[in-house]
Image (cartoon, rainbow, N blue to C red; front, side):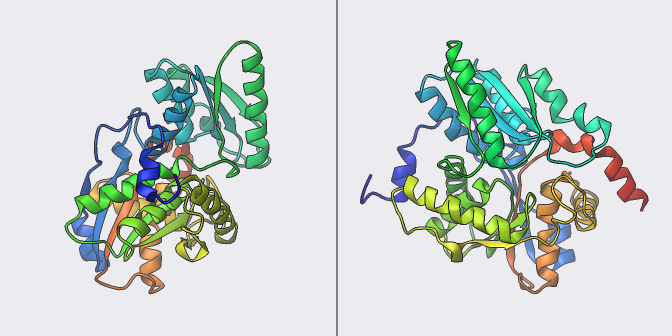
Length: 342
């Protein structure tokens, strides 16, 4: 692939079509007036099946690779209420591929409904084989998945593992490289800032790479949902080197390209923060869109936070990527009710 463009090299990767077309971009009129910016929303909550979500873009490349290898079983790991896991199960069902989903117990002392409703219930409905894993770290979770894949292979299955520890090429980032192109084609005027959640990092990294390629004046900012800023930066830098190798441009992404905010991350993954609760409440009551407590509420909270800190100037043109997550919404019913009562 040497001497060809990043765009061409990504186009040469095998891709399984999942999205029906571009997701909508809509102006948020009331919040624009309230915040003093030109605020828009990208409806990636509508991307893909079963309540949709941003992971659909990533899974186009993982399923493309799996099908190219002749896989009949796909294995994925994630939190108990993972949207990535649920979308993997839904897409596998539509392609007649067996899904094995490993649910990591990342959240301390959750309420009983956390294990019974939301994406757990949907995984059962979608016919996925469900396995549980006591979370240590991403590397351990991936190792457990590969060990089970070996067992399946010995039984005559053809497994494909979606590894999320950051030690394998971030194929999913290519989906958001393509999303950057989609945003530029949809927009009559460039955005000053794009806000997206940063957890596994593939969406944040892909958007950063894509906007650097298609519209370098736009700054992509990732709002932390899984780990604090310093740890997330280390993860993104590791993934950037793998992405650069994947697209055959070894010096393309570097540390200076990543902008990260973690002001709504506390008290940790899967826990509703006051800033996230305020953001969720604001979006629902001003624009009628629902955010989830774990991911999109903490992502959207970055916008008022960055405005207060002066990192987004008044009058800026800003795009918020609504990445979905509504499959897990009611698993956090008690936390949400406690927030509203407070």
